[in-house]
View 1 (cartoon, one colour):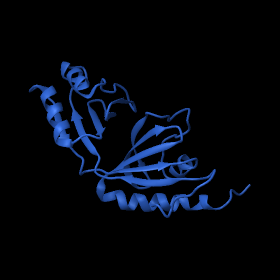
View 2 (cartoon, helix red, strand yellow):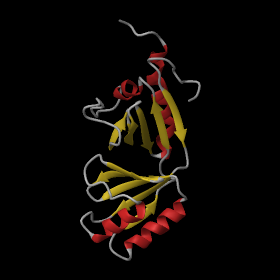
View 3 (cartoon, rainbow, N blue to C red):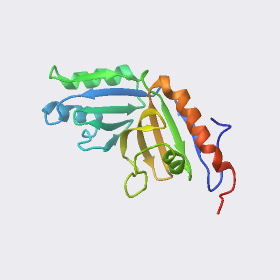
View 4 (cartoon, one colour):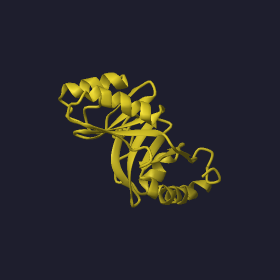
Length: 183
């Protein structure tokens, strides 16, 4: 990945952030449980499609009407314990899925153009902006795509078994940006 980095005005850089904590949450968003989970995370759960919330080491991504993914820099066992305590026996689930996914980060001036080669989402800044995260596909690989800033920087969360293929796909998509732009 480091060797594939393209610098300059048409640059793109791909890196992996392995072994980050990821916890799947399933619960009724209208319940008091959702408020307790939000308090445990330091920010309310995102309420709408594509939203994310951030507090301290945790970013919570909305995946569906009753499903969220917490992306964190804390120990997974500690986070799972805190969130299960917040459930207090009410219906819902808290599952450590850290080994299920990895995090690839694509950043640089050409990052959006690289992703547009194989992503059906409208990634134009008027539609997809920092803080948004959506389940989608990049090439043939299902991912959660999350824009973290307006550099632009994107985090792609593929299943671990697809990560190598997706990284190679992105490196191939970055290749044309090494040459000068054709007018």
